[in-house]
Length: 350
Image 1 (cartoon, one colour):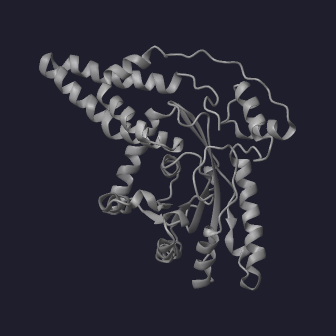
Image 2: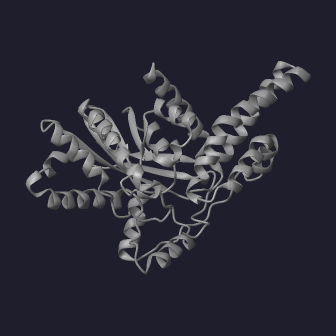
Image 3: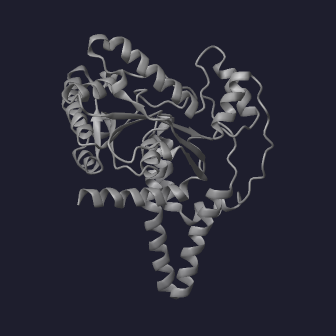
């Protein structure tokens, strides 16, 4: 029953993302192990929408580690648990809370031992900066802890890179790339685990820097980012952009016409109550990385329901043909705007 619920929510989220995003370009799916224990390690630029994008574009049933703050309310905690989400506690959650991580790690060991898939965000937090940040050591506790309990277990690590053309702006173009599997067992040597841990982190970091746009986080970061923004580059062409950054030669991209921009006020007017709800919640959000998360969540829950209610009202006052035309036209308007309205490079400095 839980698996059916997981697939139902997955289908719902995937359908919603189809309308929400201009395009999600997925590459490297052939690198996903079809069976066996696997740990997907993902960079984290954009809040809770990141795991959703990975999960719906991955054939494996996922178990997720996400920050404990989202589990504060009992009902929310219960709901998230039905979707295989588990809390991970950090120092900012309180030193006393850190002890709870041991129970979570035991659950992770069990998941891997059962030959299932686990997704984590090894940078430890979300951040819009276009750089791969230092990896925390939490993932090594999970991998090596599982191997300590079962030395015969084979664990594959798959780095995953997410790059947004313009996160926090609707609609956006997204690149999702799966890297080459890394056998964790090759780095498990208890007699010298400090050295092997460093090697493993370096291998994973190198792949993540190739799978997503990576601007070295030094004194030149903002200068390079500004040049890329002014050149209106397509950040989802990850390898092309990383090559520009490496050689220092940034090629300007011709700006495209903003097709179907006239639909925006029509869509807002036709979706006034959900739009007002979104603006109210967005006004209380103080983390830019959660803009997409909240907007997508509200869109998924309210827009379809609101259109159905309005369609019913059209049916009551007119007839079923007019209602059907209204409903289809509403969906087509959103689809045209999402898929063809041009999103420029970053409009918000990072």
